[in-house]
Length: 190
Length: 164
Image (tube, rainbow over all chains, first blue to last red):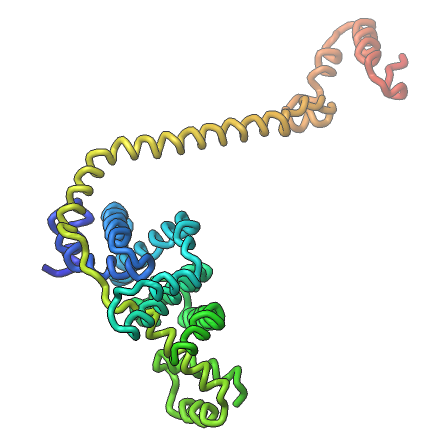
């Protein structure tokens, strides 16, 4: 069935039509939430909440943008709220510890794989410590791989602002990691 | 090209948004600048680490759980709507009450000012000869004089008082 028709029927309260939209977009919403949280259960809960919110906000959707862009905007705003409310909890793992914890565990397989996983954790911990606006844009671009145009539509920013904010975010992330991951990477020959 | 500009180009090149000409300029700078070469390696490494290796599957029965929650929410929606509007109604009533109170305090109505005789004639359409007419209608001269005297007693302007 045509997406416009599905949206129109969902706006009229047709749960079955909305079910088809859920099938189409659940993976993308989950992937976005996972990119932010790196926790399968939390990402699943967030994806459910986002789609419920979208269903009740559908009457306000005026098709000025693509449905996917609109849904991403709802998702990004909901996840931002979640991150704001859970700021403290998400920052619990100290940056250095995040790497050490994985590096210290002996049964993770080959040495290189363990090192890589440790570095990945350090990067995630550093990402979680960035200001929200940088974290959001890095997640949308570098984790979810969205285009500049999509990010511009989702965050309601001009393409120029997306460009400059993304560059600033990458610079900040590198600054946070210099002397931690970079030094650690150097020690391990990266 | 200085290192600051090189970093800007470097960041742009990560997204493949650097044109051929600028890419060549960046390449030329990188070849002779070890510091920017290091930055380039670091950005590449961070970018590769920031992307999750794999995104796990959704938990089972995602759609079924979602549609069940939707039904539940729809059942409770009218009550929630009432609560939402009740909160707004309380806030609105309070705001109206405060505005009304402020209005009473700051905008007390003024006492109506007494109109001058001219204003009365002009604004209230009084006949300027109304009072004089009844005096002039008197047939006897004494009555007319007496009435003129009494009428002019209240006049504050002495020159306008009747002097027979």
